Length: 205
Image 1 (cartoon, rainbow, N blue to C red):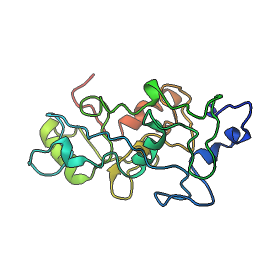
Image 2 (tube, helix red, strand yellow):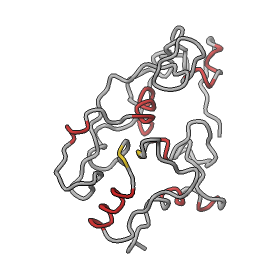
Image 3 (tube, rainbow, N blue to C red):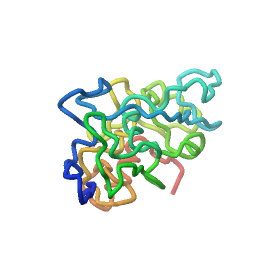
Image 4 (cartoon, rainbow, N blue to C red):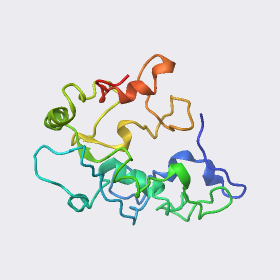
């Protein structure tokens, strides 16, 4: 599966890397970053049935005002539903699909209205202490730390967008889950094996 912009008049639209990276005048967020930080706020996943911290103190979304953070924050510079895809940092805006003002829409947008209840949480530390607390609350063996080399946490042991999605490859050929990391060698199990690297679904059929 190939993802690329199309433009009849702007040849830069075919330069895939340029939408995220530039060799000159880059932002310091990550290597050669070519986008400004999103101006949107998202809040943090909150639920009475999920505790993504290691103590028993009640937490609210206001405790996590900087969420999403890390690499997930970089994803939001395109997936916030507001920022134009062609709005790169270095140089003029790139024309995308005949309009430099095209922004992502629909399922491609990180839905800030769902992050508090149904969107998979991101930007939280997932270590042995958190795993153990979740297993205490939801049943022994329900959660485990990822063992698959492709399903990875970031340097701070946080679960991020890139834990399940890799923007530099798309080995699982399914438009509904773009850039999905390939979790197994069996193509029929490649999608679910990513989920089951952390979730054991104890007691479920």
